[in-house]
Every structure is written in C-alpha cells, then in structure tokens.
Image (cartoon, rainbow over the protein chains, first blue to last red):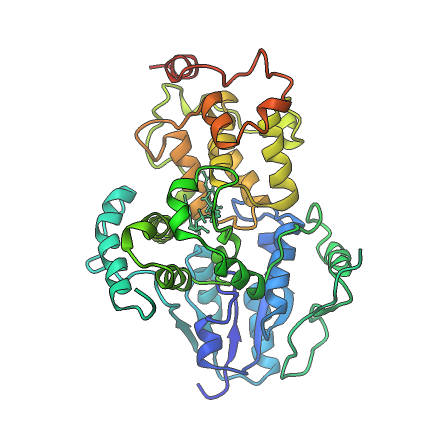
Length: 151
Length: 277
Ligand SMILES: Cc1cc2nc3c(=O)[nH]c(=O)nc-3n(C[C@H](O)[C@H](O)[C@H](O)COP(=O)(O)OP(=O)(O)OC[C@H]3O[C@@H](n4cnc5c(N)ncnc54)[C@H](O)[C@@H]3O)c2cc1C
C-alpha cells in the first residue's frame, strides 16, 4: 500500500496506535457508530459522558471525525482520498471483525497488532484467572528483568 | 468559570462536508455541540477529561508500592487509569512499563501488575467467547432459578433514591462522573443482584451506559463473578466491610444508621437470608 487511509477505532485512541505509528501523516478517520450509540447491540445507548470522553481523546489525535455506519463512512473517506488500502489496529470487540468483513471486498485491509501486555505460548487455559496468571505472571516479570530503568 | 478552548490538533488534509467539528471555544461549548450532535445521549460531560495529556499526568502519579495495601479503600492509591486503558489512550504495555520503571524490588509492585493482568485476562476471554459474555458461563450458586431474577432496572435504582446513603452515593457518582472505585462497583453490583434479585445483565447494561471505562468483557464478567455464574460462590458484603473501606462516610449520614440497614448482619446470617442452599 502506497497511500492508504487509517481507520482509528475506540480501542486505540492513543499515539501508540500501530497504524498511526506505521503511517504518520496519512489521513485518518474515526466514525461514531450510530447503531452502537443508539443501543442496537446488547449494550444500552451510551450516555453523553462516554461520547464526550471519546471526543476529547480524539481531539488530541490527527483524525477526521464522522458519524454514521462505520464501514460506509470509512469507505467514503478512502474514496475521497483516492486511497489504495485501509490500515487499522486489531481490536477485541466482535463488532470489529464484522466491520472488517464489510471493508475487505472493497479495498485491501491491513490490521496491525498493538504491543501486547504479555505473549503466551502455548495459549493459556482461561478457565479461571488463577490458571492464566500462573503462566502469565512469570512471562510479564521476565520483561521487567530486561526493561531499562533504575533497579 | 470559563474553560480554555478545546482545539483539535491540525489535520494535514482538507475537511469534507459532514466532518464533525474539531474546534470549540470552551469545554462548555463542546458539551453544547455534542448535545446537538447526539440528541439521544443522556446527561452532560463528566468532570473526568479525555485525552493523552491527562492520561500521562495520571501515569506520573501511580504508586505501585502503596497500591497493594491501600487499593481496597475508596480513598486509596488506585490509578484511575481505566478509561484511558479501555480506549487505548494508553496501552496496557505502556502502563506495565511505567510500573516497571518505578520498581526496585519486584514484590512491592506485584499487586498492580496482577490487576493489569485481570484486564488482559478478560480481553482474552472476550476473544474466545465473543457475544457469549452476555450469557451465564455457569449455573448460579445462589439456589435461586435464573428466571426468578427481575429483568427491569427498578426506578429507585435508576434515580439513585433507594434511601441507602451508600448505594445512592455510588449511583450519583456513576451518573455524574462515569467512574467508580472497584469496591463500590462490587458493593453496588452485589446489592442489585443479591438483595434486589435483579438479573446481572440488567446491571451490566446500565453500567456500560455510564462507565467511561465501560468494557463489555471486564464489566460483564465481573458482574458474573459477583452473581456467581463465573465463580464458586456469590459475592456479598456486610455493613462493617463497607463502613471500614469507605471510612464510614456513608453510614454516618444514613437515615438507616441506627436501624433497618439491610447490610447490618454477619456473613452467616446474610448467607441464609439471601440464598437458598
Ligand atoms: C461490577 C464490576 C464492573 C466492572 N466494569 C469494568 C469496566 O467496564 N471496565 C473496566 O475497565 N473495569 C471494570 N471493572 C474492574 C475494575 O473495577 C476497574 O477496572 C477499576 O476499578 C478501575 O479503576 P482504576 O483504573 O483506578 O484501577 P486500578 O486498581 O488502579 O488498576 C489499574 C488498571 O488495571 C485494570 N484493572 C484493575 N482491576 C481490574 C479488574 N478487576 N478487572 C479488569 N481490569 C482491572 C484496569 O485497566 C485499571 O485501570 C469492573 C468491576 C466490577 C466489580
């Protein structure tokens, strides 16, 4: 991709968003998802506090703000900028995958992984936190041993 | 008092019709415009401000060494970073590294790192379960059938007028600021599910509407932990627990201070009163 646009979503509203890091200065867009705001999902409609919090985070990022159907808006933004692809960051919310499926038929989509808290191989057993933590705690603290800084 | 202007960082590309505004003369004008843009959204702005600048300020104030002992107290040294972490303003990895930078001996920072682990754990479960986080993970251990729990949020809870100073205080804070201390979330959730016999999903939905850190995974699975569909037993508390960790601030001003407090009992009594086992 030579001139992609960046799709920023609500799980990565900081400067370490890997799409912003990989393509600094490229046009970026965030879409307030009307269906989500109005409570089409199992969650209820969002209060103005939450929208305002997101808005203030977004004002500190170089990103155009839109409202409506996410895939439609992202594709229209890509069209307006003559983009040859879309770059975004991975998200956990299942809505993210659904939106990706709507984008992919139209333009190449690159999904970048944000820096993980801890990498676990093999995949941990998530039955209870204590099981997960037995494996994860060791791996997290192994990173402290190599982290720069005072000791 | 007038607040300073809110200006978005400049964009290197031209605006298009339909772009939402990025320049406001003050926080009040931001609030006014958002009310017009999102007429279905209830309430006003939270006193908690969004943005990386504010997140970094909070990050410089974390106290990993005091956290372990003090975190359960409402006025304890918790970080208040959750809204910023939830929305990736700061990544969990950045917070982890900030804790590491302040760590001379591992043991004193273990608890805070462990709590960050809870977030990572819930996110991994969400990836595995998808929308399944809205369903009971296991049968309830309360002895009550799941269909005996109510499906509507009662008015006195929606309006914060239960007459219990603690619960009304938590509800007011949830509504006005969108952030609650972990212990307050546990007490409020437990009151709704076990004392008021409400389906946990009703409370979870209500929290997600208001919490700035509202995250379906951390939230729903914590509600399930309280309800006992994702733990070995239901979570309950009593007055002496709440009074201790809130520094007595609610009980001293409560109408039910001297009699009628539904939380004034031993755990054994509450257990037999609330559950059928
Ligand atoms: C009923 C209920 C609902 C909850 N809903 C949410 C929610 O929607 N979003 C949310 O982020 N947290 C939720 N939590 C977890 C916890 O209450 C908050 O993360 C914490 O209170 C946030 O305050 P803090 O940033 O000062 O946390 P700190 O104690 O300073 O912890 C630092 C960070 O670790 C993470 N963390 C700490 N404790 C937990 C925990 N138990 N579960 C998951 N992450 C944790 C958070 O990202 C937090 O910012 C819920 C807990 C309960 C009991």
